[in-house]
Image (cartoon, rainbow, N blue to C red):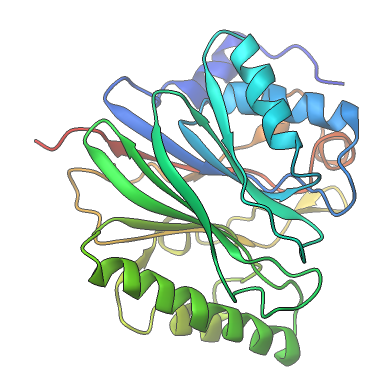
Length: 279
């Protein structure tokens, strides 16, 4: 169960979510199997404290939990909506939950990025605008695993995702965010990172600013940096430099890492802030 947390800890996560900024996050919900009700309650409380304008939710299992999450967050006083394109082949889906102050005009999939394999996920996409910041947000949950075979499978997925990103840019949209569970470790999986960014249009701020940190919880410890945060051509007037961070959600919920992995999920969220107005 979630324990009482001193208000100063809650302030650490909400202080940067100012009126003139948008907080965009990703949080893998650990739904390898259907997420139990108690875990879902803890996730909803974590999302309330995360206070993101839009959050990408890999391992959303079942997909209907997106609606439940949005309803429960809305019941807390601020309207939220879900966006959850169905993926029939996927074992765990990728969804989005966003505040009603965010204008999400459409959602879709990066078709073919699941390689037409049972259990794999396509990239999921929303087209959004918050204030004057309009962007395309791509949520990923790539093939897991170490070794050459899994890295090669991720490469095949990334070729399709890269082509999608380049198509969006050619269509005139300059701001594309690519975030989620990469299942790629900086350094170890540089082949994957390099392939996705072969045109040089992506900036991996998670690799830049979070070097040496981890987002995956295993055996009571924070280990590899499996989650990633990148964007294309977002200028300094929009991305707030240095705001990308791994949120220590177990601390916010008053849990040990072992309790957190058992009662919430085995990933920590990533967030970053973007200005809503250019100056």
